[in-house]
Length: 260
Image 1 (cartoon, rainbow, N blue to C red):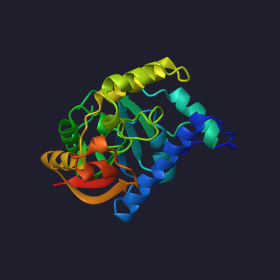
Image 2: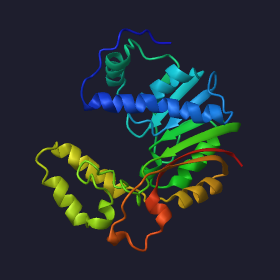
Image 3: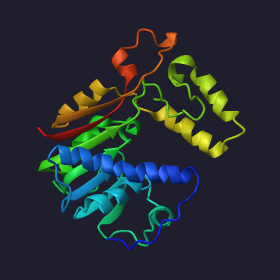
Image 4: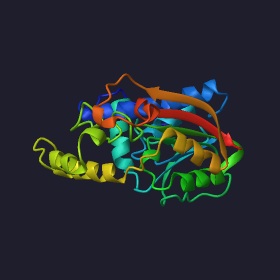
């Protein structure tokens, strides 16, 4: 386990980002624990690990034998450690935690390498969800489990991921792509690079629905055994008329799946 010092805190929006993701690890652990899925001493993988904050939380809070975080982009471990020191007083990253750069829909690991695969807010960005789910099934042990969190689904209130510019939500129904682009590019208060990145993310979203996800999971050779919907009270714009209410109201999901 890593050494710890008294927390000092980052004291800005990055601090909120760190805390939100570090604490999200407990949501994973709680759902697994209440479903009889062990974590302590097990082999874990995180698919689409991003900056690795959730992985750090999982190792510290869950004590797995190992956790490998996979992402298309290399994880900046120096930044992760600096933020972990500021927020949690951690002076070194756990030896059980490693990061590996992966390819789209390809996990560089042997068959049945992991007892638990975790993925958090990644699957709305995956170009071919079924292909990646097949890879997850391949690297998952016969008695293993997949924890998948997806938030937000594209048709839900904040499905564009652009709440910074459209806090009222449902911009995908109330604004054209040209209007969305114009608002973000004309924003003088935000970093232009950030706006450009978020526009790129928005344009690449796969627009999967919960039912689509369920079909992809089944086709990949997995079976959902636990389902927790993420919903909220929202006002539906007239421009969304005709859209299935389930796709508007279901903001996200946490689920557990096992080999079929």
